[in-house]
Image 1 (spheres, rainbow, N blue to C red):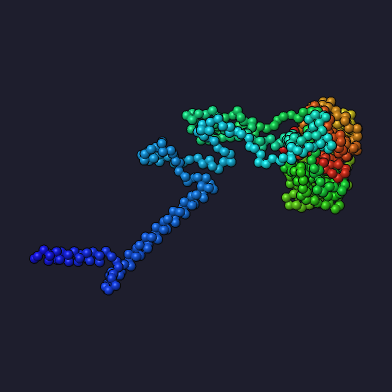
Image 2: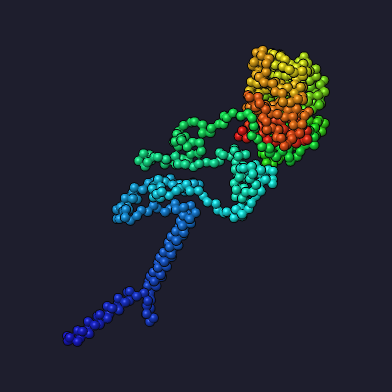
Amino acid sequence: MSLISQNAVLKQQRDKKLDREIADVSPIAHADEEVGPVDELKLKKSKKRRRSNSDDSSKQKARKTEQEEMKRLEGFLFGKLYTPIEFDKDTYGDDDGQEQVAKDAPLFFMDRSTSNEMVVFENDLCAMGKEDLSEERKPVWVDEEEERTEVDIVRVNRLRKLRKEADEHVISGADYVARLRAQHAKLNPGTEWANVDWKYARRGISEDESDDESDLTIARGFDGAEGDDILRGNDELVIKGGTKLLPGLLEYSRLVDANAEEPSNGPINSVQFHRNGQLLLTAGFDRRLRFFQVDGKRNPKIQSIFMEDCPVHKASFLPDGTEVIIAGRRKFFYSFDLVKASVSKIGPLTGREEKSLEVFEVSPDSSTIAFIGNEGYILLVSSRTKELIGTLKMNGSARSLAFADGGHQLLSTGGDGHVYHWDLRTRKCIHKAVDEGSITGYALCASPDSSLFAAGSSSGIVNVYKREEFLGGKRKPLKTIENLTTMVDHIKFNPDAQILAISSRMKKNGLKLVHIPSFNVFSNYPPPRFSVQYPRCLDFSPGGGFMTVGNAGGKVLLYKLHHYQNA
């Protein structure tokens, strides 16, 4: 075979081999060739495979984008909680170092992002250097008019107290605002507990001394205490105010009248605080029993009850706070149930002919109600059944009563000028003695702890006795108070027996507050430029913070005593 023929054969073989490779690789058939069913099926499967792969990749990209967006939003709202801690490349330059970091990373961490205060750690303090962390916050907005405004504090009488010097007349607006704030803080010292100094309890503890993670804050008054000691001990964290009330001047301020929402149409005969210190009872000759919520600002009225056939001479809560006893110049009395909001009429009492039950007292244990009857009789009524359970008889007429010793003893005085002590368990008189200088006794009151009692007479004399010494035979009073010149008809100790209030309804401004145990009258009450009119009744709140005075004009005056923190 010639060389030419051999080349032709080789060329033909190469062409055939190339055609077969093109046919195997290319999925596209020639137009003039017929495609078999097997090749067509393979073509469809390959197309579906490519389409599914492209769909999966697009879904993965969308899911990844959605996760990144969610983490970005969560990091924006709640802080970068999902961002891992990153270190500088200089610290760990290779992959082994990064693997070591991931291996030594803590499993838990303290989330401090929810604290209201900016948390500063010791490492941050070192990095920040000598920057001042206690820099005061600057006001967001400043009124430029305050500097240009001038206020005359002499023209208005109530602004004269803002003067620092006697000849000071005009001050700037900014100074006026500052003095008003200072005056408010002076009159309302009870809000000082809200001024908290936030300090870190880990002062002076180095990094190698403790690994405690607790960051404690210490309030004012406990700066010298260690934070751990506060939590580990069982000492009281609140320091109770045990300061004594000083004589001389009484710090007080007059508030909105307790019955300003609905004044009485007649004289007020009874005012009394509920045991919770917020509910106040008022009653008088207008035959209405009113309840007010005392807050010192609005004193809203809660309820009013009309007694159609009984002008109220006296109304009183039971000490347990469940009922109100209402009495007048009638042979019956009423009971108002605070829980059921129902009024019950009780009486006349079985076997008695009294036409008036207007004077009564309730025992501190809420078990007995003592009414003054005719001809020196004292009627004992059960507060549970409202039935007569016994009587006591004085030599003269009875005018005033007072319970002592938790309700086991009863004191009485009246027309013969004597003070009687009764044992209610045996219903017998255990002691009787003359009230020094008294002709007729009209008022009687015992201190909450029953250690003292005061007796007022028709001449305006008030004698204060120590009860144990009086029962032991000592007739000399601790103090004789002669600041009133007319009949004393109301005496009241405040809850801690540091103030004794005495009043006479027959004289204008006939109300005095006496400091115990110095027995000196507070010289700044009643205020010289304001009249309490003719006082008829008064009461102190359970915490001693409020004092109310009911007068003949139908008003209930309300005062705040700044020495006491609670109502």
